[in-house]
Amino acid sequence: MNHRFHRRVLLQAGCALGLAGLLPAARACEYFAPNLRITHPNTRATGPGETSAVVTIKFDEVTRADRLVAVRTPVATGAEIGGTQANPAVDFAIPEGEETWLREDRTFLRLTGLKQPLQVSRSYPLTLVFEHGGEVAATLNIDYARFM
Image (tube, rainbow, N blue to C red; front, side, top):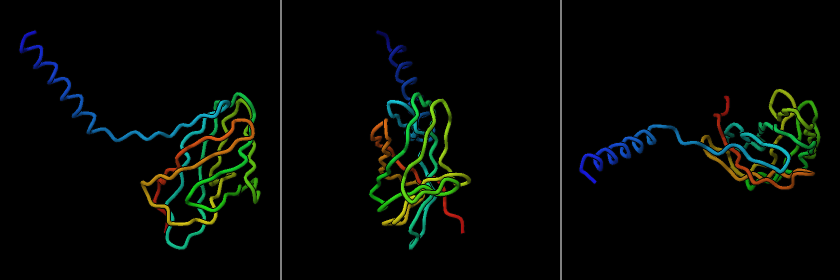
């Protein structure tokens, strides 16, 4: 092989690595149960002394109706459903063939008994438990600063 070929390969590799360094890091934000997709579990940052956080999650690609029946995370002692379908437990219906949201302006997931403030740009383990889909290990992203 000649020097021009090696030089070209090295130059292409260097450019590719350089461009990759300029792009923002991708975060894994899709998770799958056997019958549905879970997209981007996220919440706002919390301050010292705050005891709860509202979590937003999208469910779609639902091939069999299911229910979210439990949520576990090491940063909170519990969870509940709040908003329009408020329930002191976690029990949220996810219909087949529809896009369904847990979000602040409708029905939402609230983490209760926060053990620490949730900080912007951090992520924490989150386990979602479905009636039919079983347990799904996910990540809770803290995407937004809290509003004063």
